[in-house]
Image (cartoon, helix red, strand yellow):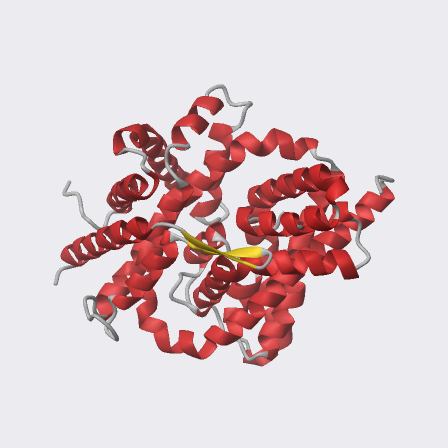
Length: 150
Length: 265
């Protein structure tokens, strides 16, 4: 079997390597220290993709991949603490940088429609932020009152 | 150019982008009650845009299409990491009580307030991506996985993401202060509301509250942090199982026959 650069597994490997470089340059964690954690994240993705394929219900892969990450690091899981410690060597922000690099490249295609709607979306952002804050404050206020905590 | 070579080229470009972006590092500027934070990923995004045909012409149309496929797969590593951040915090969230857990549903307020305005402003399917959440990294991953980033939904989530990354902490710092002094909420309720799912936005909001209620500083800080952890933990599942279906439903109701269909399943 010929390994193709288009294979999702190989793409994940390449992105993992890119992240190890960024993790070193930006957060001074050398790739050897970060390697075991990255290997765990890689395996979570591979197993998550497999579960996505065999599970009924057509849920997106992000559901199973993130759930696996949660289960493997819960304190109730025997190796939870160890997995959490190893994966903490891979910085969250270091993982976002290559993704946003790819996103920047692909967004170039839609620059015009982005320009057209960009300002509107910025205005909408303000209402989105106010919405989550007020929404949560109202529910918290009511529940705290009902349970007699305030 | 074969597809293989195209992918290789993209990986090499992104390698260069990542190194430059991380070398620039995080830049933060204090402004009023919050901070403008420019993270390496923002530089990577801008540099990526610069490689396009309108600027440096390093990538062509087909490269840009191929980059889209790479995003869909690379977000999965981020989601794995996201999961490993949540796992250790679960006991604390469960211990925090009903008010804290129930106020999580208030995060759907992004839709109730944002969606009508977005549609009024003339946005169409962009409104779905823009208002289903406060558009942090996991939410980009969800849109990328379910719709693709090269869609109206993708542009919506990216727009709010960039707005939040640059101005989010300042906005929440100001708004929490405003809410504390003018709206009839208990400081504890405001503290819980501050946990919107972004550490920098939560810190700014909590900081403003602590300044106004210094004698409750400890409780406010603890509630804000716990609520932020909870928002992080339930955010993905709330988005997929409640927020996006809600957005799709409202969009169809409001737009009726003019509703545009999803481009990618």
